[in-house]
Picture 1 (tube, rainbow, N blue to C red):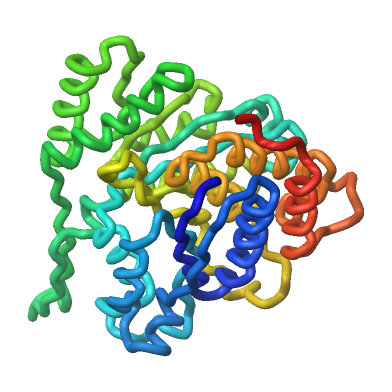
Picture 2 (picture 1 turned 180 degrees about the vertical axis):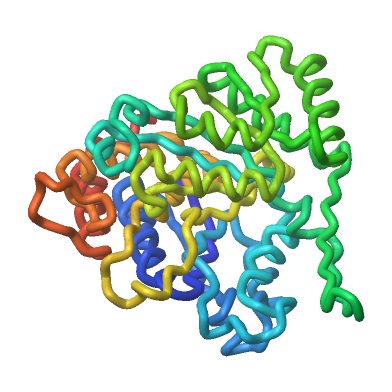
Length: 372
């Protein structure tokens, strides 16, 4: 039996709706396999601003640090667009990643055969896609020094500083290469080394790490604009991609087109292993808060539920339980139990957010027990 404390951060917009389904899945797993999960809710983003005037309260960060894992919904919305940039909901997301030391963001992209038609691309291009993007999460332009100044001739001048160190690059490349070893043994490092000094450093360091520590892993480098093109033209060629913060953010949103909906894609943000070997992780779907559909019961919860599977695997070491959740999702998709963003034209029923959660929970409750 595993006992674990999990902090739950519903956030804003559709966040509470999709996180509710993730919590249902966690409870179903605990009941089926005899675990005890202490689920503790806390505030982040706009909800935290409304209650505490800050996007990440100190109590929330402390609670997350004391937990085994964190499950997050989404943050932000037009309600908070007019407040100063330094205290907007998104700053809470950046702050919690930095505060927990979560530098490696794992974003798997897989296309089930049943959803190949949901993509705007040809079935022959997307069917069978199974890739992972490792995005460096605590460096780069998002965390660099920012300024906004006035200039008599041109009005305002804004700057965002992009900075990377050797150590930051080494650690995330190692995570990506180790993952590649467990998959198809191929790593693509993405940069913009023909223009950016940070990318030239990235390329040199990545090449050295791969040559010295992972000579058995197939390795290539690729410019980010070329990668963006090849993700659409030949996505089946990719196995593991590693890249810096902003490039990873953009490329994974693009990759959601392969799967047919951004609502399907999970993520795990990990730091260094703790003394006992486990990794504290922040788990969330890659999409935003979608305030335009909040409260309507139509948000896709699968990205959140698959994030729960990653939580079970990476932070709790429950591989069989993680696989059971993934299998339950696969069966729900195969049966057509999906929300309207990916529903097949051949099917007439569109499932609600809670309907999809209920189907997946039922699959877990009646599926085969975990193998020990």
